[in-house]
Image 1: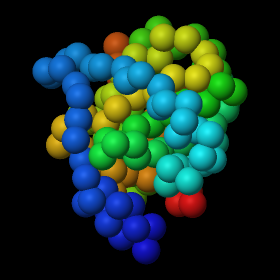
Image 2: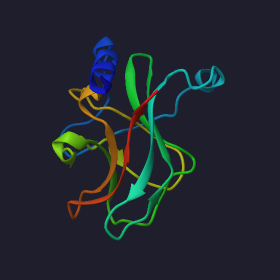
Image 3: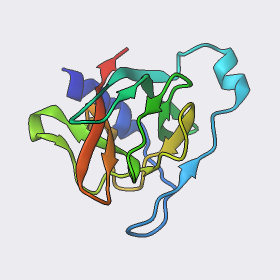
Image 4: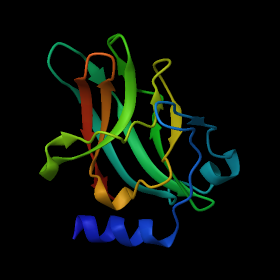
Length: 147
């Protein structure tokens, strides 16, 4: 049911903004007028847990705005200083982090927003990952819950 709801929402519209292979684009935060209407635009949320020797805390949300899907790391997001932390997507049933889903570099703790790249169907994922691309190791993840 979870995947059906996400897939149905994703089928409505997926557009993207990303560069070619190996590069990512971080999106601008959503307009304040959207936030003023509450979190009705949010479709899923989760809380991060660290993996291995890393600490990752805070929350994440998945939302859609103007036909584009985004992953937002909330203002309470923090990671312990991995050398190359990237925001990516994963699927519990498929074993976690999914190669090819990196959305962008985590440049600082706190709030940041990342657009899904073209070809990524939000309905295929139920996790947001912080992934160290340089060493191919997990830093942390959040299991998503539909709202």
